[in-house]
Length: 566
Image (cartoon, rainbow, N blue to C red):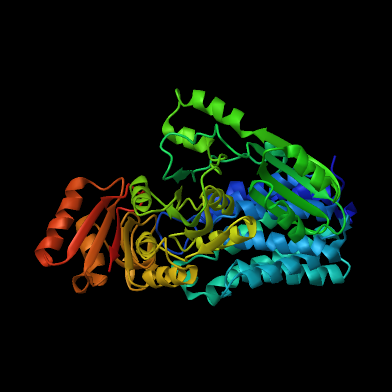
């Protein structure tokens, strides 16, 4: 039986684990409500889902820690959130948890003031992680919660009173977000990220006050099926790994004092493949594929004690998967194989990972030279770990990531902190046409700086447009939008609306000034009828037969068309 809230004077590791699970459960119950706060009435509101998957990953990693130390559990939660971060909102949440872990570092328990200071550390870390912080977002709401917590803690408030005051200040801040961001006021919503953070906070408070977010799931957060399956240019059915140089996937924690993370990374660089070494001077997580796990464990035990040691034989895993292929679809086989690599391939200098939101679009990226494609985009942003796994599978010393969506760029940038055995470069493409233009500017024989410059320049040479549908009544600028209306967007801004797909597509292209360009590229979605595509092509030929038009079956969900004009 949980003690009364007023009797909980300090926060320890087991309590923080419960709070992480409860926060995840609270957001799981409310994620669709948070998703619905999307500023645009388009079917890709995913803030709540992204934040839930991020906090779910944090709770899962925190739950693996056997220590009673709040510092160690917070570090594990931070690590989990880093790996599971999805979308801008998820990345910012992971930075908040990272800063909280910094504030609790080295502590066995934390009193109300230390908890409040950790919240402030989280805010500081999150602000530093965002290149151009915008007020009226989750940043503002978290800042006010930290201020409320500090004020209450300094006045002698209990742990639960400190968090409840933080919540009250956060709610007031959330209500003011439309005054700070006019686009929120026009859409009639508050900031989705700020709302998601306060839902998580309500889950934390529920543990202290005896509510039941945890008991509904027996203390666990149900996992959601991962939709972001990397597809390799070299793989059609599944990876053959019989000749793996490093067949043992080895993962464990090292606990000690004065653990030197960077030195450990350097010492292990040549010992295997897919190396990950992250942590603090007290706790370090190591993941590596090796020939002999014993040698790695012998090395690590010199630094401290070993915990949560897991060793998997990937050859055996692949053998079982080969039998399963007879009864499963190829997509299932690819999903089962995302843990495998092919490190026996000779390393080339450059490789490319691209994100795509449809099989047809993925095929185009692969045909243009991308090594790996991660499925994702609107409504299904891949996590930092998804992208890192794809990077690790590329047999190259330096890997470019093309996020191809503005909500994936931040998660992609975090891959640099996760993958240490090769250089990662993020080209900040915010649309499929931008990504294709960047990839066409890539030269596998060029110099790194020249490639970065050319690919980033390629982003500015193309205009991007989309046609989708409205999911609610809304007012955007001078446009009155009804639920179900078709919407035309240019660079993620709604520019036209209507009832006819052909008319909205034509209007969008006209506003993209397609007649003044040389090339129009069209990706049509999985719900777009071929006769509609042919009507649009006929119109383009009649209006200006001198402009080249390329049409591809993108097979993307939700978006009838994706346009590129250059």
